[in-house]
Image (tube, rainbow over all chains, first blue to last red):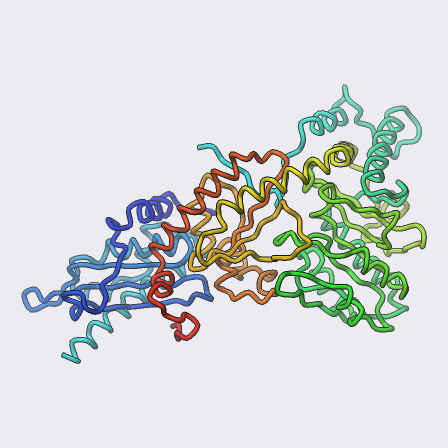
Length: 140
Length: 401
């Protein structure tokens, strides 16, 4: 596999210390669950499923992502892309997070062309999680 | 980091003794002659070496040495056998039979023949990877001229009952080709008792060099082929081209060693497989692919549900194995062999093929099994599918985006 060292490092970081890499989940019943947006993208039959959760807090009138967690089933670059996305999300406003493009992940991880769909999946995951969070607020 | 090689079904290292013999046939100080040169000792010596190799291979499969044609490998042998026989006998009929789990070196020539107007039946394997003589009997018609099936499946290690199928095809006057790339030198093949007409052989799967193979072409009853290469009329016109003496010598020496060691090799592989399976069998949600009674112990293909194969290979970085996952293939499609067994795509994505060989030690398989166990556990820890499974969610009922 023609992976960059960055993909390999990110993958191993995640596997060796999942907690530090923000692997995990918030589930119904958890304190603050109403402030968590969840996005699940991909399909098992396609070989990758990414589940992203963002916890948001209203700071100075703006919703900011204060924490994020993920779980990913997929190839090494899908797992590395999820981890990379998490690093990019924390502290961002929803608008800033919405603007993250898959190309940024491609550039940082130096993903090979055949693995670009992993970064697209990450971009879709954040869009879904934001939509989910917004729909929760509308239901308040 | 020490690497453990468990991908013997992909290729094998060349035996040291084989390497030594090969290098004797290359340089000025060695025996570099063209075996086709009839006018001097350089040619005669090279020819002698080629014929010794032919005898060694003939001994391994119990045939007449004159029934062996040297080729560049099993892909060429498959092409020569399938296209050569279909084109030669096309006036007898236009129907051909093969299976869905053949190697691409068989499937692609059949696709080509379909372009040329032949009709091909692709037999479906059972869920454990078997193709039976009954299926072949059902598929053949009075237009059938060729049946082509592999002896040992490269992904699963399942073994086809080629002896029974040969009886059937012979009784109907149909040519029977067997791709023995995976089985040659590993399990017994007896051409003097079976009714196979064409047999493809590769050297590098049984500790010989890459780039050389052979095609067995039966003399009685005589099988004829339209050649792929035209040139100097070497190999009785079946395959023109100067013989690669050193490669052929390598194949012959590997065949001689295989003939001596086959029983010991098999016993050793049985033991390694048992040790490995003992260690991994209690991992939850694993599926053996090709779980057939008639199976080679050197290949074990397992799907680890909820873990994607490529990520498992990355986690097992000190172990060399292969996967049916799309992510490890250039085509981004999961294994067509596992799909043909009726495996769900996600199980095909989650599959790993472990293949053991002559240099594998008990320590190697124990270490690998332990690493597999811990890696599967760690990857499941980060898998949303495992989480859903643990929560009792039925993954088949979810509408995936």
